[in-house]
Image: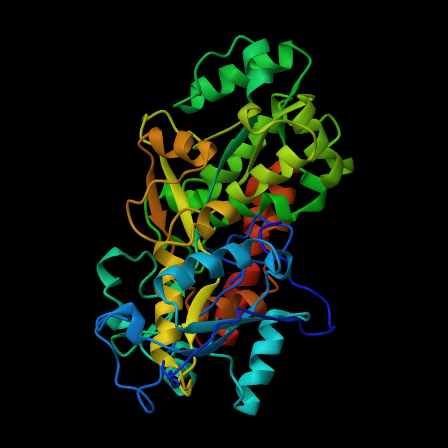
Length: 450
């Protein structure tokens, strides 16, 4: 699991104890998240207060020693407190010696806790953006356009409003084939597949060696998310493809991204390349089976890499490459953001909060620790698996924000895309599955006046 959201409990405060002599106070299911995780992806945002401080063109524009104050960061990563965060503070204070940072650990559902804090008007200086309309961002957060990062940022528009940036992603995730290198070697696979035919050939070699080629965890349903949220839009080469359902009464057809994606999964099942009994799969056991080489591959997000390693293998035995969904030789993979950093609008220490956010993005190395791709465009990962993935020349396709109307229709139609995938794979005639869901979509769309 990438990030841990904890149940209601206590709040932990850790302080970087500094002497501040003479220093005053300063400074959606869908295609946007990483749906293929066993915990929901989170969102976040950033803001700075122009009311108590003049915004800096750069947090350290006047010199790092000029920035001072005490700030609080509300984090969901309680597992890092007293560990990695201690190292971050030490290195941060080497650059900003007059800033004190406290970590407040969220012990409840982060999104809900953040909304409660917003309602009370008692926001921490730095936090993650909860699920609120972008039009509400200026009410709580300050713009971050003065950090000098705008041209380098991925997902710059996700937490922006009226031309101003309010949130910066903490890191990004992609989806691909996580594989056991020894299983590949034992099956005589010397190169990772770059076309669908090569992928099928690799699966056949693995099957011949008595190895299950791909663990689908079909029964659990959520591991199928990427087959309905990510693959359709990369097949269509259109990041906004999921939102285009709004323009039709029959969004699910055999010849568009949905049909082509699910036909790939159906073919893998028909050829015996998934688990022998896909209706009795076990998620926790599958990680051990990938680690041991009983299963060879997952098609999931890069977040699962460390879980496979933790299930009983070494990092150098786990690889990662893009899914070759056709025979063009062109590789494309989805890119999705995680939490977004934000700075509270009414913070008494805006410059310090902004300096901390910028340092976390540029210098902390958090993306490597969390297994993410950097939020900065073109920055190569230090993780061997992500280096391997990026070395293929894969094009990373940024997702788009879910259209509110599409979400409304989806909810009214009770459209469950992973359930549709299950039905499609097992149906005698998959067209009947699409007919069923197209009918539900069309009725909900009409009922809502769209």
